[in-house]
Amino acid sequence: MKTWRDERLLSLFGIDVPIIQAPMAGVGNPQLAIAVARAGALGSLPCALLGVGPVREAVSLIRRHTAAPLNLNFFCHTPPQPDQHQLAVWKERIQAYATASGMPSAPTPTVMPPSGTGVHIFAESFCAVVEETRPHVVSFHFGLPEASLVARVRAAGARIISSATTVSEARWLADHGCDAIIAMGIEAGGHRGTFLPGELCTQAGTFALVPQIVDAVRVPVIAAGGITDGRGLAAALMLGASAVQMGTAYLLADEVSLPALYRQAIEQAGDESTALTNVFTGRPARAIVNRAVRELGPLSTDAPPFPLAGSPLASLRTHCERNGSGDFTPFWSGQSASLAETLPAGEITRRIAAKALHAMGIR
Image (cartoon, rainbow, N blue to C red; front, side, top):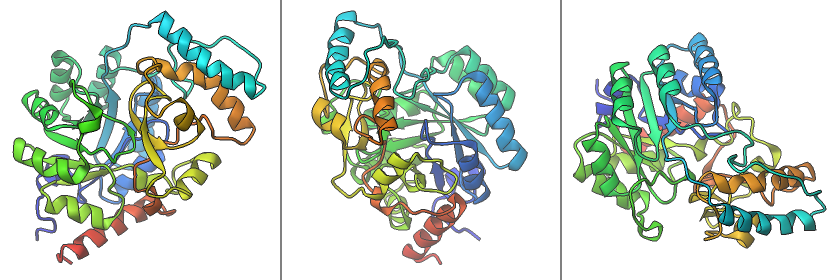
């Protein structure tokens, strides 16, 4: 018996519930992916902050606990050419805060994000891991890698998806071989997946973007941005999406080891708590507003391109966190953080699905 109105994506991915757990680089982990997969949705592993070895180990761990389909997520942005003058200006702005905080001056690297680890771009080594581990789904952020790598991923048997923040990007992804497209509304937490020229200020919200992308492409569409409960899932499906991708909904899940400052920020968040900012990494991303966002941004022309802006902030962030302050910490979050629940991830998944079916009158 057919349970969902559009089961194309369920068949394509081999899942039972039209929910994809957003990868959430820096927060997502194997335990979260396992729990979501066991609940019948698509678990995701963020690989952009991991090296080749850790990705292999994480996939092995997941596979020891579930044979369900898995999504491996990668970044495929073009690495920037450092502008030393711009970097110097940005470091000078950050140093003023470091000095005021009493932090001793120390040299910092110029190619590291605020997490303290490198941002890895999908290339030969990661492609070899995909060929070795053969995940059911591979997702990309910031477009797609070069065509030869995409062909190898497809030859490994993986379904390929990527994020679009505009209809033009969705058409481009469809034309370049994506099996499904994530329609990423402006409400979404974390980094915007934008990869074609355009203006951030004109990008659409999820429920305006989804039907336009559905009408523009023939492949299934995955709605993302501001969807945190069953009502949001039902609404997205009624607008033509085949599934949703959720990140903020899982931030308080039992399987996520969210730092205390981050958890507190999410628990206290309301509808006006987030903003799009580039001050943490150099690329627009939605985060909870704190001192860094208010005073350095939210969108600063001084910030070096992604991911170079993060390095000068790294030491200051660590110093403040040790003193109990999240003033310079990126708390990535979508606009509906107040709807997130503290429950096991499997239970979150099942509740959202059940409430969506009820809202649509299917159960």
